[in-house]
Length: 99
Image (tube, rainbow, N blue to C red; front, side, top):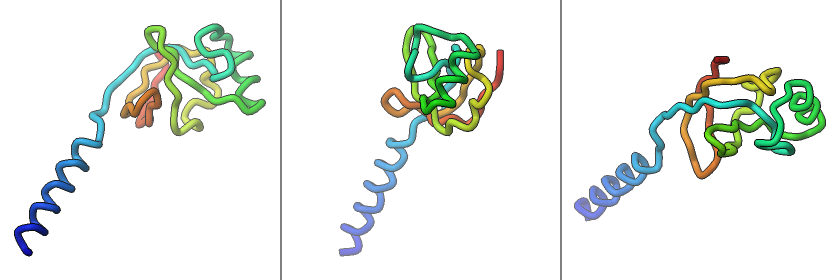
């Protein structure tokens, strides 16, 4: 019984470690999910976000959703470097810096 429990614990730890993505970085422009890759105008992006849209990162032609959103307030249209972990097309952001 103890051996089975130990094997389950090792398997659980292995899958937990595999599930965590390594921190990566991306550079690109902040837009909103309404306009995506089509517009990067600061006033337009901020107006759309104020109306309920979400900030996104446009990097190398790809659109990434961003979390947490509050890190990007006022950065619409800016060129930035984002660090975080990627899950599907969503970045969980640990830091953002204007470029």
